[in-house]
Image (tube, rainbow, N blue to C red; front, side, top):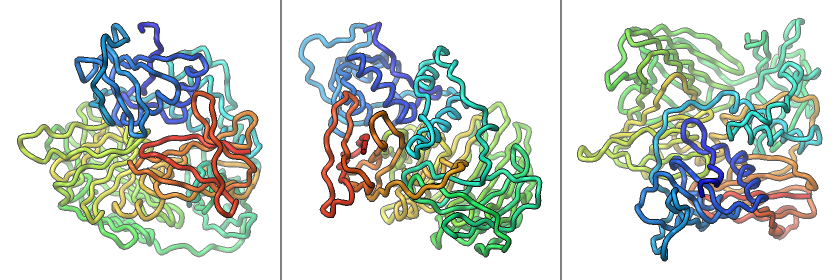
Length: 541
């Protein structure tokens, strides 16, 4: 057992991104490895037995097991592994104990390597390009070596970002879900256009900004799943939404945030629904005490594609910078927070939702934890690696937060808190909005996945219908036209329909087997059943 591979975790103790973890497990399945080791359990581990079992893993050796004797661990979707002592790796005698779902996890304080995060983002772009017949796909061997801490795969170099800049303006949606997104296009030395028009004839407003590599053109485009459009200059201004931006208000017509003299949020309205605050939101606290010092508030951008307000606060313990951003046609408030003090900082969002549990979602699944609002219970410790969090009552009114890509959150007596070591990016909205639209997990994925530049246009390649189903990843394996990784992270069983042009579609398993999918009654798509917390890969040709 001591020679069994160690299940890799990110530096903050969380699970790797789903596509990366599945490819790591698939490599074990090819080698017929039946046991793995794990030093400590990550948060959101209720679906981990399902993934391990699907790869043929039978035994999981834990260095810090929550129970004294071996036990069977069953995941949300029914997958089961034997959790054994890390020293022996096997159970002595009969194992009668069965645990279902989440196990206690261990907190860590590491920081994820930005290079690995950037490499995963590039891998998504490369895999989508392969589905669009524009490349070979991502270099997964190199990514797996990075995940394992090995440098052996680093000789597979990729072209620098500058060589990826297209000669023609264009944008691609790298997600298999229809959505509106903002994209930054390179600006030429000539005068900036007053508008843009795509090959479909749709017109788009333009905003000129100073980017990291010079002048950029911002525009907002509605695209279908894996759709791409090319853009050309348009000589007439394009009408946009009503914008109101000042040192106290930022409003794009769908979301409105009002600030006090310290740059805290006193009012937030998303599509006509107000977030119920019991005090100003994003109150900065250090070691449990309110942060002192005055605030300097500056209007940075005023639309018509993006608006920004910057807030700077200085105290003896350090400097806090908040950047509030709204995008055209988007009913959420994006926030980027940077803190340079030696002590950790917390941004508190007090709400009147005192008794309801905190709903949270990680890399694999969503689950609920009590707020521990009683005085005789320990306060909920911060949970790292979260993609989303929601604090709402039975009427679904409350606050939803999305990490970009992840965040650290806790809640106590109605106060949802975001924890900062150095920096964090997240989005705020009224909690009912994600339920009515994509679903909170897909909403979070969409907000943290920007569009990317392209030189080729193509129509939407598929359409996915199914409440709460998340299309985590799209790629093109050998011998197939494409594949999509689907998940149901909301704890509910469900069925989704995948509409695409194909004569065959199958559900693939990590052990190499495949199950054909049944067609819809009209023969225009394929039906996929997902268990609560389930993850599956669908391939078609």
